[in-house]
Amino acid sequence: MKFNYPYGATPVNEDEAADLIPTHIYLQEELNEYEQANILIASKKYFSKSYKYSDILTFNFLLEVHKDMFDETWKWAGKTRKTIKNIGVEVSQIFDQTKNLSDDVKYWIENKTYPNDEIGARFHHRLVKIHLFPNGNGRHARLITDILMKSLGESIFTWGNIDLYHEGKIRSKYIAALIEADNNNYKPLIGFVRL
Image (tube, rainbow, N blue to C red; front, side, top):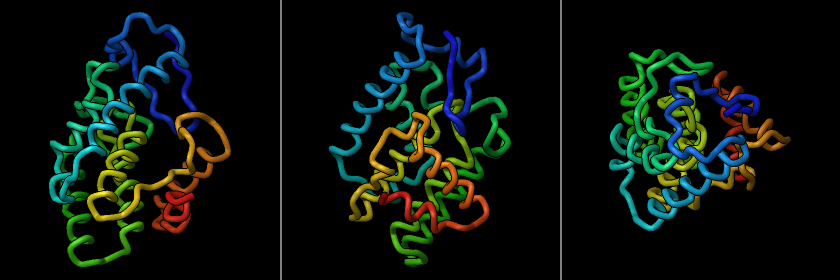
């Protein structure tokens, strides 16, 4: 199968690609549809329950959500990456950086350091930047952030109201907002999440 990635997406390597579960998929669009169906099942599962933010902000919960999102698609669903990618911390730092992020977000929530939308935007950005998994990090970070927002009594983010996996003006705006957040300017991302 030939993979086609939009700008800013994380390509899977040959070994990771070999872990594709469905054997009937040959085209990128088929893979996208298959993954989306898998993600929809996971979304329904997580939005049908209520969670405390302290339960969401654990390493195991983050892994569990990714597993549920991609367990029908990839054998490595719910497992942290083992290789260096075009983005992300060193593999050896994934656990520690994720724990630091979780601790920071708990502190922000408990001390009302930022408004909830900004907490969500900051959490999302740093989770994407850590890049826990071989693939699906953006989609995972958006779903986890929405679960977190729901736990804080907020409506979920709109994320531009489109599928951000496909190339286009809205995806470009999202990527640009993440890059601005890399420079500690969160205003574009905070604006984007409710676009």
